[in-house]
Length: 262
Ligand code: MLT
Image (cartoon, rainbow, N blue to C red; front, side):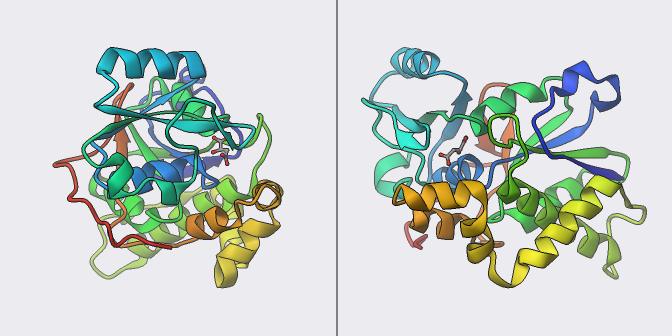
C-alpha cells in the first residue's frame, strides 16, 4: 500500500498516476465532520453539490419532504436552507430518514475532484480509525490519496491534521500483530501530515482553534463547532462512501444515535 497526502484540492482524473486510487476527501472544518454527523444521526444519504442553485434543484426534484438543504457560504448559513454547516445541528430530529443536500465552499466541491478514483471515502478526525480500517480491509494493493479540501485552493491546517490522524491509524494497523497491511509505504507528504497530527494530538481543540479557519469560525461564534470537529475516533462514526453522486454508509443505514452530543 502506498499512502500519500494532497494538501490542496487536486483533480485526480487529470493525473494518470492517480487513476484507480482510493481517495479520502478530508474537510475537518467542517464539511466532512458535518457529513459524518448527519450519517451518525440517521440521514439516509448526503448529496454533496457545488452550488446553491444545484442544491435547490436537487432537493426540489427529490421532494422537499424527503430532503434537508444544508451548507454555507463564507461559513454562514445560506438563506432559505434548513441547516447551516454546523455538525451538531445534524441531529436525529433534523436529518433522520432524510437525504441531506449539501453545498459548502470547499468540502463538497472537493468530491467533484475525485472522478477516476476506484473508491472514495469521506474522512474526518471523528472517523479516522474507522476510515483506516475500511482502507485496510480493501487490501494491500492500493495507492491511497488523502485529499485535503483546503481553503480556497490553499493549504488548511485542520485538513492536514485530519489526514495525519488517518496516517497514524493506518500505521498502527500496519504495525499491529495481526495486521492486514504488511507493506505500507508512507510518502513524504503523509509523513509531514503525521508530524502535524502528532504535534497537535494532545489538544486537538486548541490546535484547530489556532488554525486560520478555526479562528475564523470562532470569530463568527462557531467555536463549539470547532470543538465538535476535534473529537477523535468517535466509535459510532461511520465511513461515508461516495458513488459519484451520493455519500452513504456502506452496508445498511445506521440506526440513529441521538446520544451524539458535544
Ligand atoms: C468548506 O467546505 O469550505 C467548509 O466546510 C467551510 C465551513 O467551515 O463551513
